[in-house]
Length: 288
Image 1 (spheres, rainbow, N blue to C red):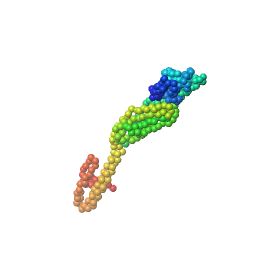
Image 2: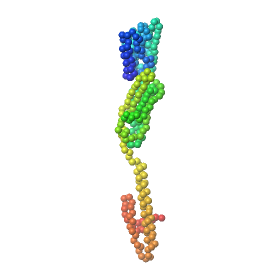
Image 3: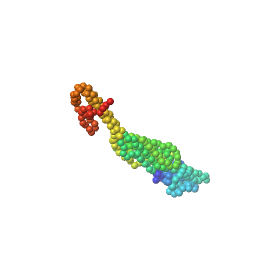
Image 4: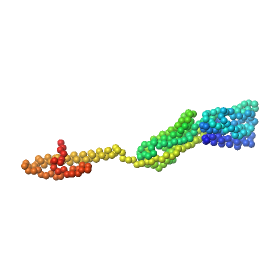
């Protein structure tokens, strides 16, 4: 049952307390009522005189007489599915009088659904929190709040007076932090219709947990490191090759004709996974 139905029952109970055994005018319910779709409402039909004639509640809806005294009658009206106008009719001093109860049907939040775009993310990764409140109306007065633990991350108050039910959706984009894995995420929906003769409806979602991991090295970082290593190898090997070529040329130009050239010093040549000695011009690449 809607919380507003409970409020109406409480009103009826107060009416009974203040009216039984008293000649004073009975408590009159509000002329504007908010009722959840498909719920019932208690109506206190009270005359303006102490001895009314033909005190009735005019409506096509099913109703039950709960209690009555000379000046008032208490009815329970069932299965209210759309806006209604209930008329309380009575005759005082030969004059017919009426009182109208305007009933507005609303669709309270019955479900609050929280969804995280990821259940496991790395620190610094963008993820999305979505809260959906299905089939609510009116949107005016509905506030949806996203929370991490007790901390409010985002809230939104809706506007609009459409009478037909529709989904209310709130989306929030945020970046994962290490502390996100220590708290539950949840969503709260609150419909406040007190300014319109209604009450306050409050619903919360099931909590959701987020696993937060340390970031892994990206492919781009691996590629950058590889390129840097290759560049360092290149700038190391090129001068070495040039030096060896210069040494070979210098030795050949200073040798005496007919005598073997002086043996050159071995130069260590290194390549990833290969290490050997370059000795003599036959093992050196020609550099132009």
